[in-house]
Length: 148
Image 1 (spheres, rainbow, N blue to C red):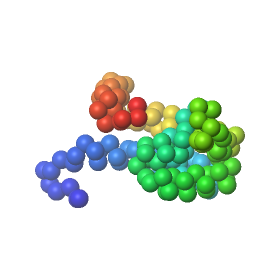
Image 2 (cartoon, one colour):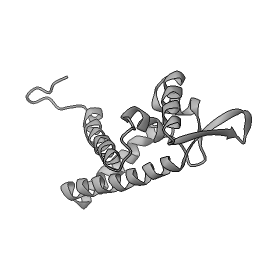
Image 3 (cartoon, rainbow, N blue to C red):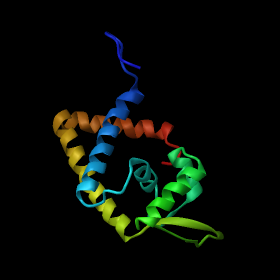
Image 4 (cartoon, helix red, strand yellow):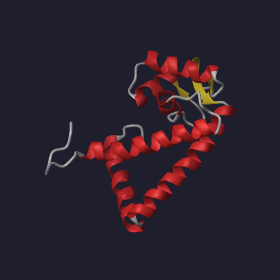
């Protein structure tokens, strides 16, 4: 919905704009680094993979997509060499999605770009406002992120 004169945008949208800008920068930087076959949707799934691996059902739940959609995205990531499926040591019937070596290379690029973008934002906002923003968003996460 377009903003009209005197109307304030809701906080959700105000949080979304910087998120979208960061995601676009990440995808562009990954393409420049030779990882030009990752889509934003694949990145959103990959970003939820924990250090020891994560079950597909948990990835789907956290990304707010169906298990079928998550499975399709993981299949694509696996074919491209970014992730692998391994047995879950806690349940012989289940499998975990883990980052493969190529996936770890992507994560390294992503972390570098995230740090660059955050530094730009901090330079724009100033140290105090950046600290306040981080503190406020961390507090909001307490009531908005069931996976924290």
